[in-house]
Image (cartoon, rainbow, N blue to C red; front, side, top):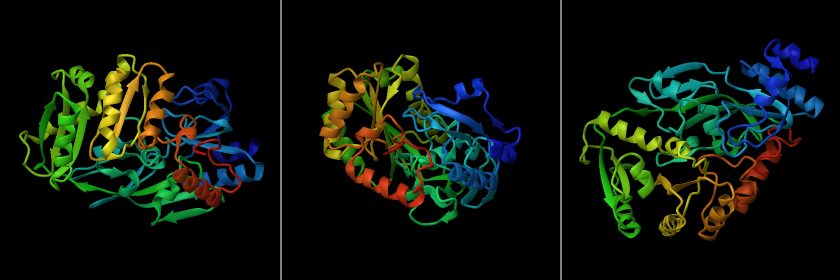
Length: 377
């Protein structure tokens, strides 16, 4: 590993304590890191990839290790900690150029009149590189929809600027390492408003959601089931939180709207604090979304989600329930990986269409299979 020490100096370690820390991500799936490096620029990444290609060694890029499907678990590979590549390089009107290790919270902290609207449940620790690499999706679109340009180092050792087919490089580091991103930003508006609806039945809720999704003024629709609603002090009922692009909603104070959306975003962490530590992210066909929610209710599994994008989050206490939940997802023609990626844990559940797309992309950009081995396919 002398070549790595020459590239990274003190930002290289083989210490056992460090290897123990980096042996897993939030999935708690144990891996085997060879060593850890901490790059600070694209040139170091390029040299690292060249070294890995010459020596046939795998690379596992990671941010803060918040992934829950094992996407950053190293499988006998060098861990590439991207968190020092955390600079905001340029802000110009509705565009922003950043390094991949910047967190979503820090991106939005630097903005005044604009924002980056794709906000996961952990913005303090979720990096933009991680968000784009799994192509995180919500009611406001996919992460790739908000990327104007990527600069990556692929498994061929090439530094590539990507302006089209961004999704081809959103492969959880399995075909490239993202070294720079040009983001699209959304202009902030204080005219947005919200209405909160409650329902006693799934059928009543589904009827209203179908009506609202046809309304062009609706920006997003967040959903909480009975259990999640009571966690935040609401009545024991289904609730949807409908954000409008204008003042059409009942709640017109934008600060109050932001606070409500933040509360919805915190449900994941609140459920974890109650022992519901396993979470899934299936995207369902509209006609089967309601069947899925009814099934989860019958099984006593709390759920919440995003109704415009039809992503439902079941959250439960026992790992053994993963198979039964994903079997019903498959039966109802849903797909997994909408927010958290695929990693190791979800490989066997992905559909044939995405599997083939991923296989072709990885074969094209990483033919020697050095990038994040053992993930996705």
